[in-house]
Amino acid sequence: MNLTATQYKYIELNENSVPYIAGTTMKVIELISGHLAFGWSPEEIKFQHPYLTMSQIYSALAYYWDHKEELDADIHQRVERVEKLRQEAGESALVKKLRTQGLIK
Image (cartoon, rainbow, N blue to C red; front, side, top):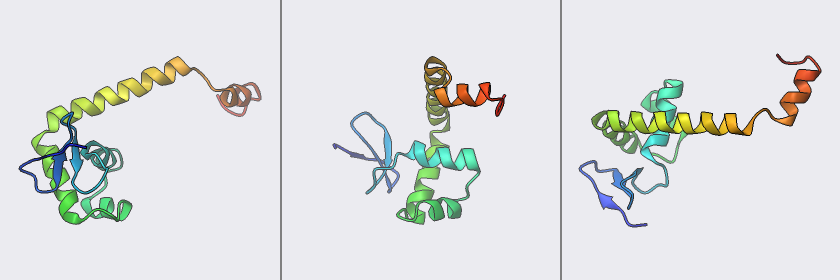
């Protein structure tokens, strides 16, 4: 993978300009998703991802806040893509069976 250094010590961009946490395979967007979805503090992120250093976590958070609009748009597109795929896939056989048995609505 070809990586380019950024002004963020622990953030690297891949050849598609996707920000990764240096020395890992974790995308900044993945860390931020947990932070936003669950309200995780940096300490909780560290607990959930013990292989990250606090410096890496804070660098990813700083990168997010400096590129918030762009990354929020990426998150929004991902959510829309998942919803579209979910709708295209339709109801699973298990859900149909549970619904016919009156176990779910």
